[in-house]
Length: 432
Ligand SMILES: *Cc1c(COP(=O)(O)O)cnc(C)c1O
Image (cartoon, rainbow, N blue to C red; front, side):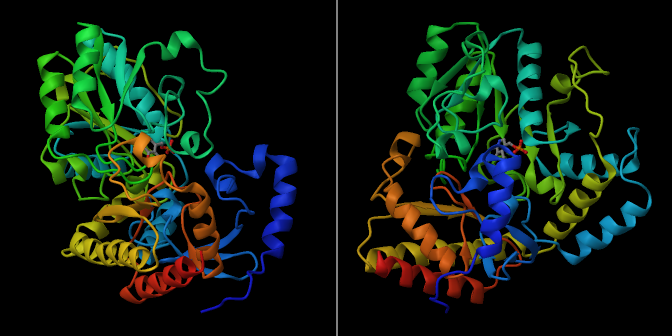
């Protein structure tokens, strides 16, 4: 295992230029490594569980392009099907049978989804689903949870997770108060707070949206009974329950968190995995609600590139690969080994830590825990996390450059990769 300092000369040169061309040098904030310090690594290529930077360093990757790469990067079968699709053109802007195929796969897999609309990102899916919640219920308010991230649309930039949490940003400037005044927030895992909001705003709340397993404030699973409780409260109040499964969909189980926990929401958003690494998002749910969406109904939502044939192709192939027997058992096995191995090493090296995993999603915090919500997550020792992150990078392990992001494993990660990662963690934690 290399302990010489990383040579990242070319990464630094390229990033220096990038900073003169693009705000912060990046196309999305967390990529800039601001919260962990140091310079971001500039990638050259990805394959399986690995990434290579422009200086030729190889890393075991636990970011997986923020979730899509559940079969491993550049899976040969995904690439092959994309090459064939490419020959037929890159965009039709018209119906294609590929949309039917992916729609059927999504409807078969996800318990709440009877009809689906494809869009181009998770952000778009969440924007549209909120419009649909409002259109269907004829109510304007929505409840979200602190630390949950539903993309960067105005009405969700209230106590948001992901980059907003990573950078410690206050609610973003440029977001009109009139828009966010309809967004009510509660701590995750707090049913009483949700009940109180419904009591304070009778007949005004269209529904509750959440990450059923939080990944954008670090990894925070729902307490026993939390999802079930939300199902009951929303029903009692004539409001909708929406699972944002952009991250968890097809990741913590083939049918997402709703399959895993046996709680069926009214509507669901998807993204990440269902695009197989190409830009995609989707929202879907009960047929009577989806019937509101134009052109079937009056709620407008559209997209030039929506249902893009390349994105549909990569999504279809990725879901086909996930359907193979043993997929989720394997993901569970390696992620368990990683998560439990890490916590054991932390204990042995005298670092307070807590964490967990579900299938191919995991996370830990440098605090003794337990972590039930974003307030708890913020108790993590962020300076220690930064040093840990840097140390792991030097040992060839690429982790999300933020305490407030979940980690991801893939079908391409081997037991040997996990062993190497744990050996690195032991070396780094012993040195902190
Ligand atoms: C990533 C993510 C989004 C936003 O998706 P983009 O494709 O980045 O716009 C929304 N919700 C959740 C839960 C996410 O993890």
